[in-house]
Each structure stands twice: as structure tokens, then as C-alpha cells.
Length: 310
Image (cartoon, one colour):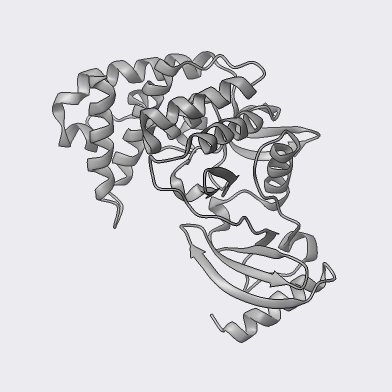
């Protein structure tokens, strides 16, 4: 990327807000976007250049989602400006400009207790947004997010890779069971609980990917939840299971406490969360077949063994 031309782009972007560019710096690159820090004469921003628009939420849904979380007391940063508002792309790519969250990604599985509770409260705010349907968010109608399908299993498959046995071909062996055949019987029993739950529970909007690089903390305090590109209308246990999978039992219990206290009508259960975390582990085991992802298989199998032995 030509830094000089990027500075010109940043200058023009800030001009829409009546602000002057002072400094830019590259922050991070993920699977779907690159993020730059942009300092104006008034404040600091994160400018997210979206490299894979098909894998992210469109601008209006993303802004609605994050503002709805913030209005309900959740901790997020929501865009103040975007490419679809001003009709200006960066090298053909869409972008969003949002206030910069100052802090660091916490170590995996070592979230401070206050941050856990605040994350639980933020997930509760997310899950309170009105939704209808399942799967990827398709559009916003009034104050309600509509999903792309009316079928809960189809909605799961829009987000996760081979997490439920009823979607597997009969002659296909899941990578997790090929690596550890002894876990198959107990894992299938846990997944029956997941299938039964998603057939009867109304959906919420889930973040669905709560690893440590989606979280910003400043010391013990939780600053904000990042990147809603994988947001999907699902049973709420998928989010709680994601916390358990990435951060372990102790952190999950602390997040769950904050969640239960903030949720208006939570019927979520810890034992179901364990079952859903197993389905998430199978998703990551399936993704281990992609280039550069082989280490996910060992991590997924270890998690399933831990759940079975608990």
C-alpha cells in the first residue's frame, strides 16, 4: 500500500467530519480486513478496510447492530462514518471509521474477573436486540434484524462448518473422530442436546467468535467487543459456548454470572453451554483441513476430551 496515497485518503475521510489528519499507523490484519489507527486534531479512530465484503456485515446492519448494543449498555465501538455513507471506496474496498478503543487483547483464558462480567453484560445487550429468522443477518426492518433463513439448522450451517451429525454425509468421517475415535460416542450424545435445543429455542443475534483478539481490555477493565463480521441469528448458547471453548471454565463462569444478571429473560444453562462448546470444537476441527489451520484439530480434540471428562 502506498502510504502517501493512504494519508491523502485519510485526510479526505476526516474532512467529512470537519477534522484534520495528524497521524496514521497500521494496527492489524485479520481474515476479512486491515485496520489502521487514524489520529485527527480532535480524537483517535480505527479505520477498517474490508478486504472480504462477502464475509462481513453490510454497513447499515453493522451500524444498527453496534449502536443497538451501545444503547443497551454494551461495550462496543460503532462507526461514525463509512464508505456507503460518503460514496468513497479505498482502492475499490469498503471501509468503516470508528472511535479507537485503547487497550490490549487479553491472553486467552486469562480474562480478569471485572472484564468477564462486563463481557457477559455486553453479550446480554447483544442478545436483547429483536430478531426474526435464523442465519446471516439479511436486513433491518424497523428495530428488528431479519435472518436469511427460517430453518434453524440451515442458519447454523451458514456460520459453522460441520458442527452437527445430522448434516454429515453417511460415508464421511469427521476429522475429530478420525484423530480420536474414542471420543465419538460421548460427543454424539452431547450433540443430540444441541440439536434438540436449537429446534425449540427462539434465536438471538450472536457474535459467534469470541476469541481473545475480539476483545479489548485496559488492565482489568473490559473496553470493548470487536468485529461483528460473523454475527449470526442463532441460539444464545453458541456465544456462551464460544466463551467456554476459547477461555475455559473459570472465565466462562464469570462471564455467565455477568450475563445472567444483565439478561432480561435468560433461560441459558451451563450444561447446555458445554454441549454447544463441543459443537464449536467440531467446527474448528473441520476447519483444520484448511491451509495453515492444522493446529486447530489438536486444540479441538483436547477441548472435547475435557468436556467429556468433566
